[in-house]
Image 1 (cartoon, rainbow, N blue to C red):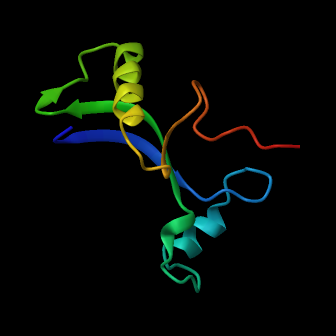
Image 2 (tube, rainbow, N blue to C red; image 1 turned 90 degrees about the horizontal axis):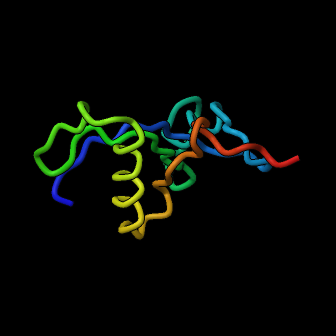
Length: 93
């Protein structure tokens, strides 16, 4: 992959696995945070552009499949494919 535009949402998860907006602010230096974004995860849900090609005319399912292929080739655990229909993972009980 040379270039891509990926749509997603950056989050920091709490101990239950739910998105914690205050923790996200702190992770990026807001509200007394340390600018240590190592806890942040990018949950992705759409691939809009890839290697010089505008993918928006394609259907969502086809783009999502391409996004999954792109992410499967990535060794970076901080970038993840969101669950279908959910931006964030379902919190554990």
